[in-house]
Amino acid sequence: MGRPLLNRRLAEFGTTIFAEMSALAVRTGAINLGQGFPDTDGPEEVREAAVRALRDGRGNQYPPGPGIPELRTAVAAHQQRWYGLPYDPDTEVLVTAGATEAIAASLLALLEPGDEVIALEPYYDSYAACIAMAGATRVPVTLRASVEEAAYRLDLDELRDAVTDRTRLILLNTPHNPTGTVLSRDELAAIAELACERGLLVVTDEVYEHLVFEGEHVPMASFPGMRERTVTIGSAGKTFSFTGWKVGWVTGTPELVGAVRSAKQFLTYVSAGPFQYAVAEALALPDDYFHGLRADLRRKRDILSDGLTEAGFQVFRPSGTYFVTTDITALGEKDGLAFCLGLPERCGVVAVPNSVFYDDKEAGRSLVRFAFCKKDEVLRDAVSRLQRL
Image 1 (cartoon, rainbow, N blue to C red):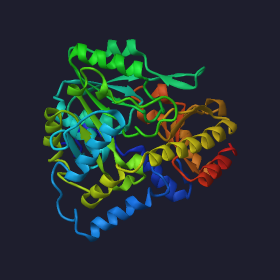
Image 2 (image 1 turned 135 degrees about the vertical axis):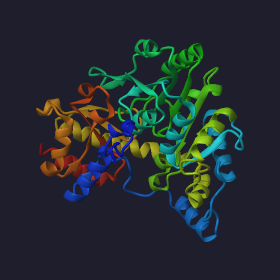
Image 3 (image 1 turned 90 degrees about the horizontal axis):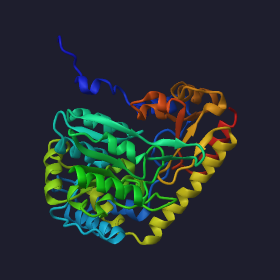
């Protein structure tokens, strides 16, 4: 037993902050605004579709490795309906165990040890872990907070300078967790031009595609020259409020999807059989559902953002996702991790320190993230408690 039990590439990640804060919420009975899951289920007709699939015996045994045909067809139809992007459901769509597996399978499939991956910092913690598992090196390009605009911005010159001869791919997330940034059409066009010029692949996490409050969501694959070099990741969890079902997908060319499928088959192989049938029906819901979801979350964003501002936080009101980033400096605080660990006892609310999403811990030290995908009354209660600070 002379060697460490945990692979040294993963040892630096340890227990995720989400597990720690979730346990803290349970132990203290605090309102959990740390984790990004809704406190209500999604559409009743979608839930009933899952029940119907279970009772009819559809998906109770292993579904097809790439996903059931009905869902792959629905994903292709969704991409065509919303973005005018045609995909062959048989060769260009792959169903995964949520977006997290899609990210892992994509990076394991497309990276070799020694490759470099550019990722927008702060980033979802699984990005760093999956890059490490692939033996590659992450190269952060930091989104910078603009106090005047109360928003985050991408420095395109910094992005260009980060590309080296070892760069293999760019890992994007837009709308962006945790900052709520929605990359503009011009920013995405510049990234696309860079990728084509330097022969780079792009893996783009677009799970918040229907949660855009200002601006628009523009898929990276829609830009000239990008369809053949982009792996696009989507998910049912954020759009339909069934995060526990873990149904995600990948779209791309047959070559790219085939590579990702080769890695995915040795991860989960298959998952969520009956839920796949339900998500296939969910993707065909009328436009009113998607517009209503966005309007509902925009209202919740404003309830929490306004309340946090009144409580003394500096608030970066998000253009998308269901997270609000705040700066705690104005409260006389400097360390977001210590602040979040003490918050449940101080006022009965759980949040997440943004420093866990940064390689440069100082860049996120005073930043704290709150989730607003909760009932209105829960958000108002949380705001009332936070005003005790």
